[in-house]
Amino acid sequence: MAVCQLAKMIQESPTLRLNEQARILRAQGEPVIHLGIGEPKNKTPISAILSAAARLNAGDIKYTPTDGMPSLKKAIIQYTEQNYNRLAGLENIIVSTGAKQSLYNILFTIVSPQEEVLLLAPYWVSYPEMIKMVSGVPVVVAPEDGSFHPNMRDIEKAASSRTRAIILNSPNNPSGVLYSEDFIAEIVKYCEKKGIYLICDDIYQKLIFDDKIAVPAYNYTTEDIESSHLIVVNGVSKMYGMTGFRIGWVVGPRELVKVMQAQMTSNPPVVSQAAAEGALLGDQSVVESLRLTIQNNRDVMMNELIGLNGVQVTKPDGTFYCLPDFRSFQMTSTELSNFLLEKALVCTVPGSAFGMEGYLRLSYAGSVKDIKDGIERLKWVLDPESSDDIYIGNRKLTRDWL
Ligand code: PLP
Image (cartoon, rainbow, N blue to C red):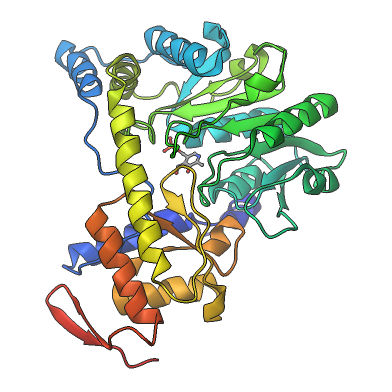
């Protein structure tokens, strides 16, 4: 069976592949620890459940407007006003089946074939493939200083007359780094001067630690939503841990929003939209409680990693990921990730998927026990000074490769 040229170029998502591998191993009874996972363990907020249940009970499950139910869009307008200090109109907002679809819709709407989109490494694994899917060209900007924080010098060097957009994701998946206010101010100014779209993937905006805050890019422009070059993506997946509902949204100029989705899907599922509306209008202490849990998990992960010889890590400011440097082990990140899964049943994501060869992305979205046991297993695999034996489930394993 022959797939088309474009489809041939698109790589499968390594994170989704790992999730599937972990699921299969678990179904076989293997005690896998998943440090690759991109979702917290919390229960769905009650306000979301009640709102979705009310919809189901009414039996009123029909098409909605393509761009989302007006009542959900009003809740998003309120969220935008509270968090971005900008007044959006109904026509500035479009609801999609997850932030992932929102991002694809944006790229599909603004990128013509061969136009370039700048990605700031480390970057979310799906960005380059989505850009290729709209026949655009991903251009990776890796900070020359080896840090996880981008700078304008590198960006200006990478930009060309074909640059159509830059994707900004702060706090950042996979590093957890929050970009500085000075940098955000500079990049907004640069994009406006050059007429380049700045796509702000703010999906982790609420999951920030140590009293830091993600200052929105809108703070650095006097333009309103309609006239600015900013396009903002958000959703309920991360801040409420509502990954399975698949609701994300875009806030941007109406001319773009108007054409984003109509021929892609008729509308996101109405029950999920009702759940998202319930979450947005419900008690917001659920977000703070999730943030505090994840911050505590981050601290546990940092403490455990200190004891892992040969590994350097930058302390994350937000998200539920960190990106430790495993280059001293002299393996590619894929080799290392496979080795850890094979020997110790620990799932990690190779840094190569994020433009960072030699690194692994570790998630602390799971339980404290998983973090502690997971890093204990990594020590056993990698550190010759650790004990030769370990119990994994009820099996005693002896290391014979160091
Ligand atoms: N953007 C980033 C940076 C992400 O990490 C993810 C999910 O992992 C998404 C977007 C997609 O979110 P959603 O689950 O709402 O599609």
